[in-house]
Length: 522
Image (cartoon, rainbow, N blue to C red; front, side):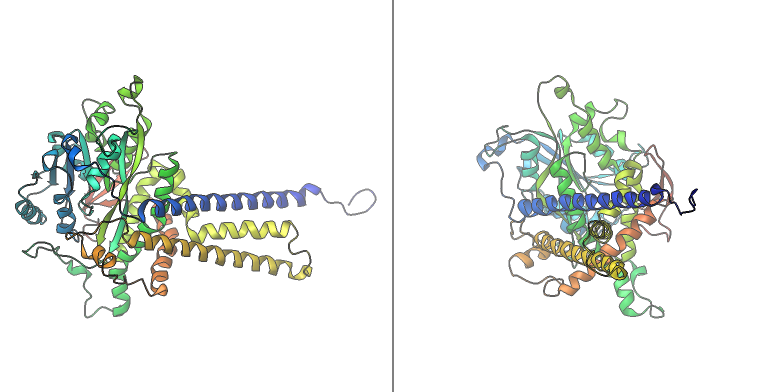
């Protein structure tokens, strides 16, 4: 009360919260629009790049001068569809005398060895070799397995390809064409790149056996339902098989559009280690002599990110001398496919947790921002901003004051539902592009999971049932935030049968073998 006896209030006491709320609302709207812009770039680029078969390649009469390529495929254990994925690199449309296939296995007793030997015997015209044993160059098991092959490889161009990836016959040729800047006549008329990688697509499908001996992955007996289990059969079946659908949805929706969009605007390195190509000479120039090439990354779990970042951020000698202009990274024209065999939900959770937990050390900002780019939370952010600004700018001034808050909540809910609906519809359209396999030229060696969809028009389980697709889409979206929150907590990283801890220097330390239940988690 002032000297006149009247009540007095500090204006800043009421305007400051209102101004902050107003500012925060604009930040929310800005973030929502920014995420949608990135999504839209991804949507457009995915449809533009991968709706039609990738066909560009150097004319046959000019292929004798193609550079030699060393293909390195590390394997551990019997992944689903292993023979199928490995066979794809025996069928490449690339001169047989211009590439070699080095298949790397850490142990001679690994159950995958008979599969590899069978394929090598089946294709004697292919320069393929099985390399057994690993080298103690660091805790990263992938680098340990690859180090010998990397050192002994004949080619300067290295293609590191995971064992669970299936590729089309023309993938290698088009990668080389992009890496070297070749036109159809084998001449370097375009900008060459230091690093080429692919958008991976997971496909949840039944096992295919491609060897006459019927070699197939072993069945993990722990995944079979016990007759005395208290869990209903339907729930048990979902827990043991739905992880494949979740992984398929993640890689064909959220991951695909953001991965493609980031690589389109090319403001930062963004590469996944499924399929990477680079020159050994380039990496040697950017690594110490005592740990040349991939050995310099043997103490990091995320070696794919570290290698791509090194080639992105640092200039090779030719660039430093101004002799040649090099592009940093390029996306390949092909998609690469990872066939799955209905993996458990727990495996999907563990895999996502592992890589988010690793990424928080390499890029904490992007890791913290990831949940806000997901459909449910991003739409909530946008709904708050829009409904708050609607109230601020008088959209509800003609309704009774008592109903003003109700109308604001109605606007909030309506915006959220509309945003999520449009988001899911756009994801569905792009999911059908990637899972429709329009990027693949079908031949006699094309797997059934692709050929059936392309040639015979058979329906995938999610086609003809929008509810079925929405079930796996919503399952993926609902789990997105809990997985990130769980991964942000301190914890071990389980990878390739071992347990690791990672420090803020990004280096990993092995602390044991097996996961929490003693099983291998991939």
